[in-house]
Length: 61
Image (cartoon, rainbow, N blue to C red):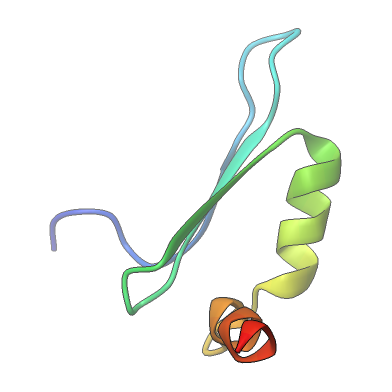
C-alpha cells in the first residue's frame, strides 16, 4: 500500500508548537485542524464510516 490512508492522523510538533490533525475521508475529502480546541472539535465530528462533511453540505442546501 502506498499513499495517505483515510482516517484521522494527529501529530504534535516540538515543544512550543501547535498540534495538528488531518482527517482524510475515503471519498478524498480532507480537513485540517490546528490547535487543541480545533482538534477537539474535529475529533467529536469524525467517525469511521461516517462522512461529517456530507451533513454540512445537506445543511447548506
